[in-house]
Image (cartoon, rainbow, N blue to C red; front, side):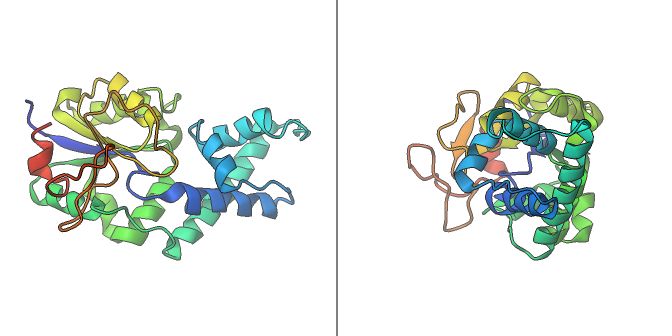
Length: 250
């Protein structure tokens, strides 16, 4: 068993349930601003999550679900403009406190900090979105809690490609066997695993239940709090919340 030298977190769906009531709503507001009659309801958005990255998701929607739309000559510019507007709406939603952190997230982050274990982020969402979520849940100083933040288009290939985890590991100066990754989706698990990370903790949500987590070490419904332990996929509760002592046994 290797010593834990860093914890690396995904953001959307892992730190907070941002997808349904955050990103989805922000996309729809951006579409309305642009005079588009597109509406991504909860069910459709679940299908669109098959593709990671907001700009990539819009193109996937046009390619697979809205083929009647006549795209402009500069499709990339059109999509980039929609995505930029969506980001502003998302930041406004975060400022309103619409999306809290998931159970156990803040507790585990603080425990790791007190133990001197570096924290990092590996996500496909933009840096603006990361900053907005952290500032509005943990405070402005929380950006400094993370030794490295890999976000957005900083690497060419997004999850399930391993690039973002490879990027973060290189900047941490750590081999993959020394870290633990936290994810919520099959794409995220494959990204971490293909980067060589073998210790992966999954906290599922409504959009990711039933995905393939065979490469994960532990699959739970949440990280848990004292008195409210997480449950495994089979419904069996853990003795207590996910903490450093439990992580060291993985």
